[in-house]
Image 1 (cartoon, one colour):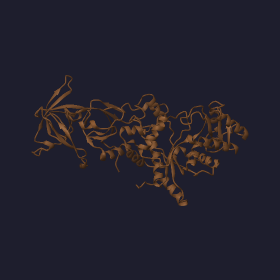
Image 2: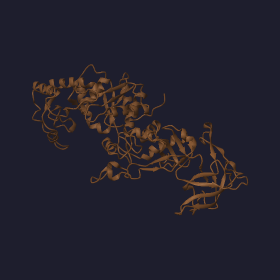
Image 3: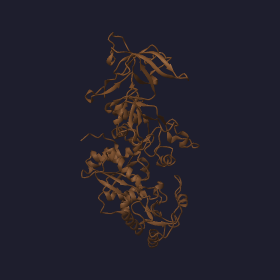
Image 4: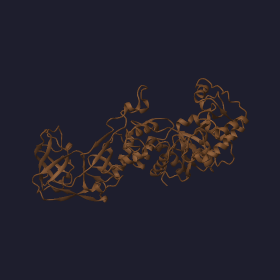
Length: 553
């Protein structure tokens, strides 16, 4: 078994195991099916999955489908697909929060009978007013001291659909003077007259997350409820629910422990805003490669290994931090540098005519599939009189130290001949139409027999065999680094990067790439790493460029 690095959560578990070696580690990932998973979700998945794996335990997928107004089977399916793609197989099983609605209702009746819950008629606005502030205690609801009989009757009528949405809630009776606002008689049931994606119209009352989640954990035998740091103040309520429903049949008494969320520069994790971008056609769906969703990263060309390596390098800690998105790019670049086959693509082609090469002649040159891995073999690249090179590799008026093609200058065609620029043919607007060159036909494979030094090497394609393609060049989604620090008078939209996508429809690729399948990844030499797109024909997405701006350790 591969070694899994320790972190502060594992140190907590190790201490617990020293006291009780019989603990069977069981974790879960509980996404709400109201959107697609994103890179932040990958951190929660990794922590829960690897914790179970490290201790030989179990890992559950449990959909938190307790809010029927926002849930959809599309999101249920996408979550499962993303989890499987990441390789985090839920060996403990797949569950739904709605599987436990009957038990949640049963325990709510128990709390009412024990005087620990009551039906409240305050509106949401009134409840907020009564709750108090961080410096002032809350006030008790005028309905707090209803009798057990009255609460049971009203709760039954709530379940039977006699009241409209928001008319009443069931609240836990805890402490309105608690310094923790979450303990000031929180609502644990609300009325929602909406069909549920699994339960249909069976229910019109639904448990709230803070109440339902600990029950679900306990019933599934979860030992560690590992969640992000914003739930730290909710932990006392989690423990109150476990302690007060007091079911001796629970397989476990789970512990909630928190870790810092993954915040990444130049992007946003808000499902609400991501949904806004999708629903307003500002991006190409939930899998638009500019988004931080898992399906978008997959479509762009990221791998599970790179995503998890990024999460590990960002660290698993208790303190919140902002992680540079360059670390994510570094992770995929490091992987693809080793694994991606090399191919030739020309973003902005310009024609080169080899005037001393026969018009009817055609030959081929063997180029390595990976220079550092000769075992991966070679492929043949056809060569003809007319070629394409990239416009960036030619300068009519070259800057200092320009070692590519220039008037009367020599350059090596990668793996082929050395050519010299003899003349330039212009279009009517003055732009370059063709470059006429001669080839040193004694320099097959680019090695001059007279020993002269050729400093520049450029890539090329036969004009006859080059295949047109589209390149999608992606950049950061936002122009601001810390998206969480947007001024109050601004919105996310004010910082959307207008250059986050550049579509290149003039590109050419070598013939071998016509056999590429969706998701196949390549290094386009001297250009970057690309992935065959899964939605658009004959399109390649740029994953990352060749240059790594993240400092290596």
